[in-house]
Length: 128
Ligand SMILES: [Zn+2]
Image (cartoon, rainbow, N blue to C red; front, side, top):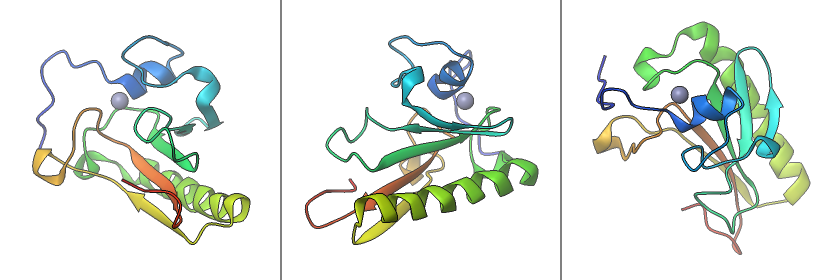
């Protein structure tokens, strides 16, 4: 439903979860901070390199957008987003936490899809 990925699209997050590191993965295996059979979290060093409190959470199977995400992935994914949000708040003593997930091009989704972002927000850093 509402899919637009090009044919033969190689998802960089799925490559990373499978242990592959190359120019398409945007992250390295050492960036992974949490991995379970259903979800993985890693430091989002590519998009906002100056925001050290930036973690990306993905399901371990590829789903292009939230309308495709089964609830048995959604529940552990959101549980991890909540845990990471509280951890960032504790570690950075930041003023707030921002979480986001984009769907379809009009929703500012650019490949790769299926990710949830958890970021610290402080006066001295930017979330965007
Ligand atoms: Zn994927």
